[in-house]
Picture 1 (cartoon, rainbow, N blue to C red):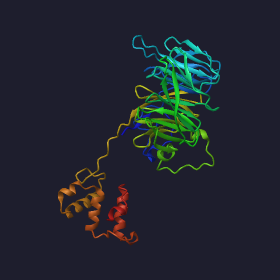
Picture 2 (cartoon, rainbow, N blue to C red; picture 1 turned 135 degrees about the vertical axis):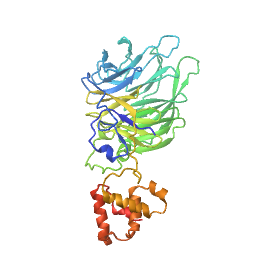
Picture 3 (cartoon, helix red, strand yellow; picture 1 turned 180 degrees about the horizontal axis):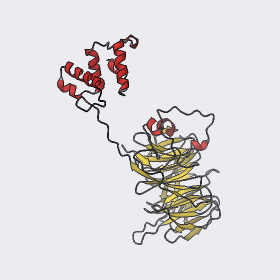
Picture 4 (cartoon, rainbow, N blue to C red; picture 1 turned 60 degrees about the vertical axis):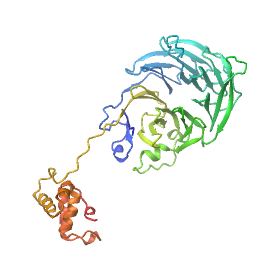
Length: 445
């Protein structure tokens, strides 16, 4: 079973002791980090993150600036300026041509109705598209087809030269809020509460053109879908504004599993739930999802939650990863995670498997007694003498020995505790005095 620890955090002390879930926070014994890095630079809300390569990533938000960062040192490498309004989408756009040296590029869309291609090595603008009639809200690159898609009031298909290949008709005023690639030349588009499956098919005339065909509409969500993530070629996951998490089959688009407020019921099963008269939508919205093929990492409210798909429960969390709502999370190599927030910060977390603490051995009669009390020594010795099986006696722990001892001393092994004799009460008091914390229930069969 995979368990994660994420360095840093502001969880209250004692939370991990009350729950089986691994709390992402500084109070954990095996976690030496309080926080790896907190990156400052943006002057407004940071909404998007994208990995460029093993060492670099980009962040963007409402200030209209794209920052390129060194993921290991936190050094700011470039400030990409070219948009006049806030950034509305970002996606990696690296070249896939094996014949030439790989270029690390990114695509950014803005409320200024433009899309820009950036060279991450030089920090320069490569190309710009300004023919949009509405704001582009999401971008995705289909590596297998060597095209990229833009979503907004319609769905557009582009080649790497930024030529428009085809587009759908106007969908809704709300438009497409998220896109994810699926097998068999399909994509899933979030349009309000609906999930629309599109298939890309080549043009009949043999040209480079494509046609977009709507295949199916899924209406299982109760509120607007905010995030999509592909887990593998068989599974993808969606999250909604009211905290729904739905796991889908990527081939036939059937629902495999669903959860509502998954972080609330699964994260703290032993903790009394907090009663609130009202709950802000930002506290329940699944703002963003990313995956490592075994777990889904969800940005919910101010926190980060790790949901194991096989176990169908949260296995790690940081309820207060940022001061404000977490809007985007992204996985990096070397077991690192980055997150950005409405508070304008970008934080880098380190993930690692939990190191199991050595288990304390159960004391037997051959172990040194935890107390040098001659009284206790005599009790154990007497119990051993009364037991018929000497080999069994050597393996028995103190509660079992006390059970046998109670029987040999003539203690009652059933019935009402109020009927305890003064001898029984005296034994209990002495056990408490030497901090064994053994209740009378150990002496009841």
